[in-house]
Length: 125
Image (cartoon, rainbow, N blue to C red; front, side):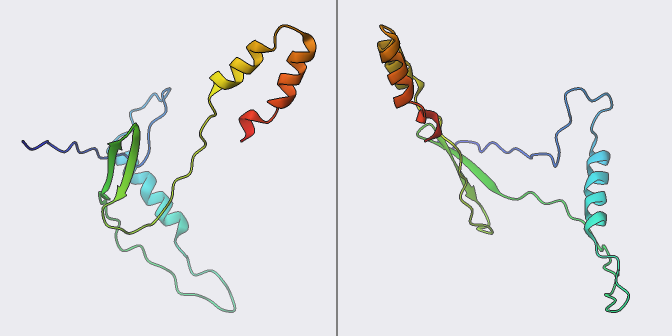
């Protein structure tokens, strides 16, 4: 039995929630054109004048990134193997361990202060 692959085309930009005017495809294309035109070299320089770059075309491509769920994680595969990136993210430490230490030390002020001192850098690991 074959499973259908779910295809999602992500937009270049996402409209703000409080936007009054709809973010249409024309506005999206205008934003992309503006960014390309802004970064284009316009032949500046007096002594070593460089030739002006011309914007020949802009192509919309759907870059193949595959997101695969695996063991409560999501693996990201680059379909063209164009880039080799590692994505780093912070993992929040388990709060239950911290909470258990603090709850166990509530019997006296000294025990509470000692527990706070021992766990001062717990969330910075």
